[in-house]
Image (tube, rainbow, N blue to C red; front, top):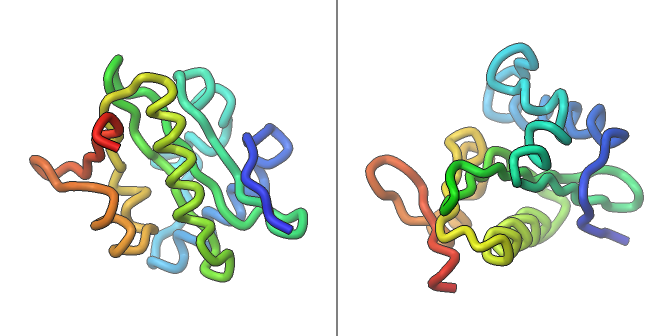
Length: 143
């Protein structure tokens, strides 16, 4: 059985382990003192910044994650998005939930950070985002 739910403090070690594996798949290393420091305190870095962090759980184990935080009054940025390939449509379901969250919170735009885009299937990126001025943008108002 699988479910998507709000992440909590107890999920952080599992999310970091999954992020480490995900980054290794694209020949990168997890840097908790640099670009990946947001994974050390999800509550502050996401919920404390008018955002959200979700986990995909399959058979009780974290198999994916998605995180977005406020950029401005009108925009939210997807900073994290990954699901194990064997999760089926897990990554698309996580993305749908982020976009729905943005819509319900009255954000007009969703920007996908490069760190999230690197781990996302190109077909999903092309389907949901447009490139504008070197940024990946989705308008949630048009959906």
